[in-house]
Image (cartoon, rainbow, N blue to C red; front, top):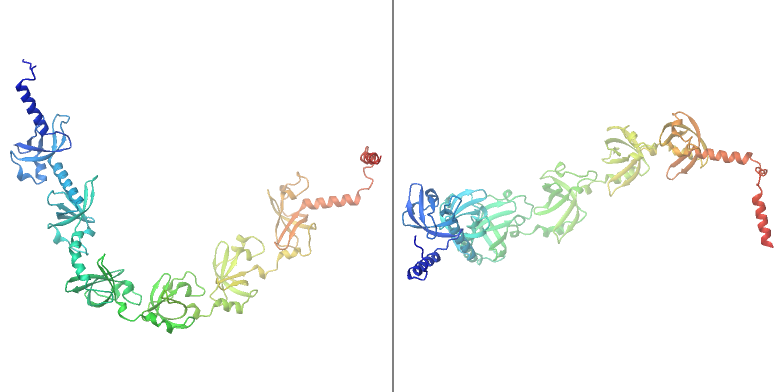
Length: 580
């Protein structure tokens, strides 16, 4: 074997030049798009020659068919492929013609997007929310939202599928490789110049004759206006249709009808014309001077909502009857339970605001205030009969007499016993009660009544009593807190606390009592304003002991004890020393 050591020979230098020139022409790098020449074609595979690679890459024939290159497959042809791997684990070169085409197409889209250029595309199919568009030059698939198909609603787009047309690129996601296009921008830009010419024919205040109703929505009606320069779509807002309240345009218009319009605004930036129908006739609010606050009028109900009724004083002159002004006594009213659309009802005007073009009315003011009538016939302190119509955990509600008024009877005003839960359980719906009116609030529409006020207050038993007085009580029950007792001749129960049962702690045991015993106790607290009283057996013992000591002890008691006068002698000795 011959070893060449002389690298300076002409042959070696020529070989080096050829090698360097070949490598410089083909820079091999993974992730790059390179050109390959088809050297061989079989039923399944295509073999390529790429200078600089140690082996021939292979491409599946089906891959070429998928990208539409099946007619270009022939020996000697050159195609672009993406070099994914120079050598995999089996030593093969991995390339992809499909990915190369996708990258080339994406790069072209990016360039068009950056230069704000339109692209050619075909709508291939419908999808959720829009359509799929194929880029004619590269075959890349793009998404066109439904709102970007046209500048006006289109019910059927079948005539657009498969037709080559212009699209504008509006969004590119380079990370995900997604692109969004718009046909609407192209259509709108073509129409923009035409719209400018059409709008130049109008000025605010012009009357448009015979505009055709094209469609409507919840916020207004669309009209088509024909001019010598073309057609123009315009919107008449719901509030500009009529001075009367309109719920929906379909109540007034039908598609295809012709109506006159008045131009009220022109926006050259948005290329829009605002129109009005109601301004073609006089404003009924100009007649508001014919109506006076505080006067009663007949109104017509034209619409009912959850919060009130819209009524008309005259055609086009609307006013609101709020639900709070329907009844004196009912709260949280559902207006549709009182009135129907078309009803003629009496109301009094309570407010006229010319600046806000607002009129407020009241239906309840046409009727006598039942709270005023109740106050006149049954002033505070009067007794009245009522029927229970509702009971909750803390109060009873009664329908008072023949009035459509509910009286509020709090559980504290049922009985003097203080046992609210027990007292509430004594009553049920439908029971008749005689109660006393304690308070009437006409502005708040509230009446408070009492039941115990018709009874003698058991606390009056203490009128002739005072603190430290001894009384006889009966033990009702006992527990760890103390004794529950009731004074003889009184209907109120009181608690003698455990600490007040006896002077001696060993005797202060509630368990000594089983109930039914009659014992004496002293009044330890008495407050007529708070209706509060307390009893103490311990206090009575202290009072009795003090009385016994006072009545039976001797003034000389204790003088015969040793050193009993020692303190006196010391005091005398100290006084004598101070005088010296």
